[in-house]
Amino acid sequence: AQSVSQHNHHVILSEAASLELGCNYSYGGTVNLFWYVQYPGQHLQLLLKYFSGDPLVKGIKGFEAEFIKSKFSFNLRKPSVQWSDTAEYFCAVSFYKLSFGAGTTVTVRA
Amino acid sequence: DAGVIQSPRHEVTEMGQEVTLRCKPISGHDYLFWYRQTMMRGLELLIYFNNNVPIDDSGMPEDRFSAKMPNASFSTLKIQPSEPRDSAVYFCASRWGQGVTEAFFGQGTRLTVV
Image (cartoon, rainbow over all chains, first blue to last red; front, side, top):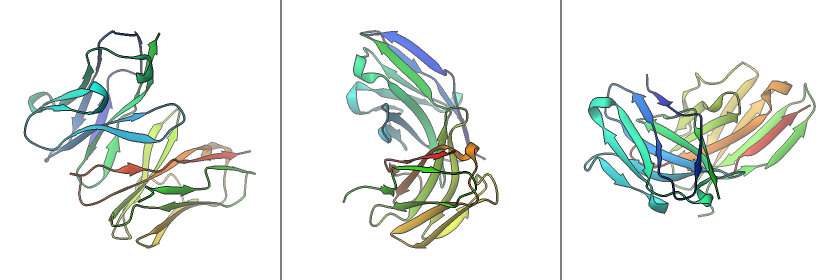
């Protein structure tokens, strides 16, 4: 069975601070990994995805994530956050079905 | 394409009533997912379809919940009878192919059962 765990429930940052959100997955086969973002009151949107190749993937809005196979991890990073990055962030794993972690709420203080 | 379309956007109903949520996936997508989002339980996968066939409904909480996909362009999630604990935001998402492609989400239906 595939599952996803996210390390942080709520992260509070000041603008310009760096962000790193942890994600670990468990799945025995080839994994496809995603980070989605949900802005307040909106639906989920894709930030970035990893299928194969370079384990460091870049997404929209300056986000990047690193796939470390040996650690079953896919952590999300952003060097300098903005107030507009306030949102909920979800890590997801997919082969056939698409399963999400519990989500991390990120609050960026202006 | 207009994206994944869900209706209604908001639904308020009384306990015991039947509720039907609707979803139109993106044309050409062959996977459709139904999720429920609550503060307590996060984003839960209820059921997913491939080529209109239900593949995994292990996330459906009770027999009160049922989902159908009569054709490639329409799916419903029905709750009968509804209960206050069913109050949540229900999202539909669609995708083309197996897990190598991203899923696109609808705007969600906010269900309130009073």
